Amino acid sequence: MERGALEVLIRPEGYERQIFLATCALGFRDPAAPTGLWSAPKPEELCAVAGGYAYLIDTGRPERFTMIAYRPVLEILPIVAEGLLLFVGHRSILAWGCEEQAWESEKLSDEGVTILGVENGVLRGTGWEMRTDKEKLFAIDLRSGAIVTS
Image (tube, rainbow, N blue to C red; front, side, top):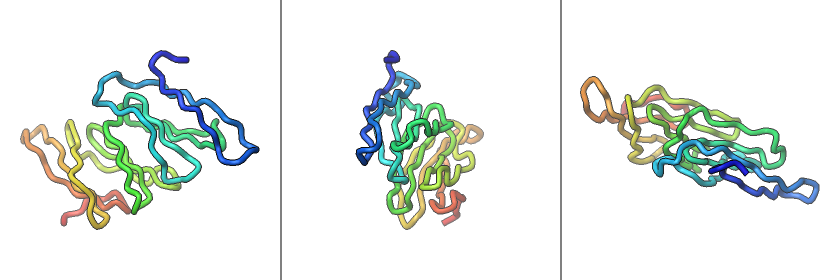
């Protein structure tokens, strides 16, 4: 066992598949960096997060996994209606769908993204802008990841 790692015993569906132990390295010990398990948009995958390090694990083929590039992920937000799992970082958001990465937002903040809510396929939030030292509102179309003006 790795010190501080998240260990998850996975029992895939079906008798022909082996039970396996997924060991996910711990990113940060800071309580602001999440740790836990989330459902993934693809039914055979699960999302394990250990201190802000996020992994998507194929439960039927454990050798296939993806580590999300954000280090740390600060918030995980399931958007079931759109079939997305969002990973919020310090400056931007990465969306994961059934076909792996769906999109990555442009830079939304110089340091700190706050999600305000989701309505009608649009995610709204704020990001801090260093130049003005103010929070700036943003809205993202969840289907494309594009910034919208409404």
